[in-house]
Length: 277
Image (cartoon, rainbow, N blue to C red; front, side, top):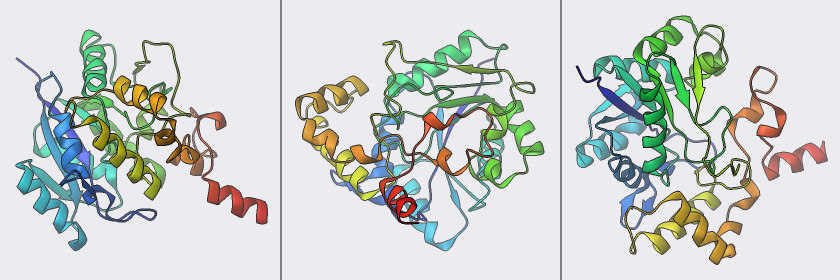
């Protein structure tokens, strides 16, 4: 019997740094629509679900899901672990993928690579990602887990950080879960130097420029295509380079056991405030 793969894309309008970022326009469609389009390019057969909150401001996300003909689930605004679990349960997942909605440049081939590794080692790992440690440019985040693994995390996680970020309870507990990781075959590590995700206005300008340059040439452009582009036109890389390496880990280094300080950094404005203090 074939296992049912469900990709859950968590999306909401609330964002402290860039409100409504998932609905920003990219070549006439929303950023969320462009991301879903890229996820639909993977080779593995998988259902894609948009998981948003019950808050009224996220009605627009539901409307977009309906417009895209993508199933959706509405749950807790702050407890993303519960939202993820309930969505996976509702859609009867056997294997669950977590791919955040701030990765509109995600390479479908990377998603397939992580899935291939997971299934090639089926029964060996409860959870496989390309994030522990990360090597690809930030914004190619893929996490794959069994439903049993997700359920166990949902039943036992309790710290706010574990609930907000969905999977830390899993990868922070290697004695409970068997955790695998996929690294970039190039041997390179661009996780702290190249930023393809969105959290700041500059990230949006970068992503918009990449789509304008590459999408008309080939809808299925790859991570390598983006890297080639910014090598040819370094001014594009510079658009958001000041935020390369900035991720959510920086707020929880005192709580995380498996993340080192050199795997994150503060945003420029945070450094400025720190120097002024």
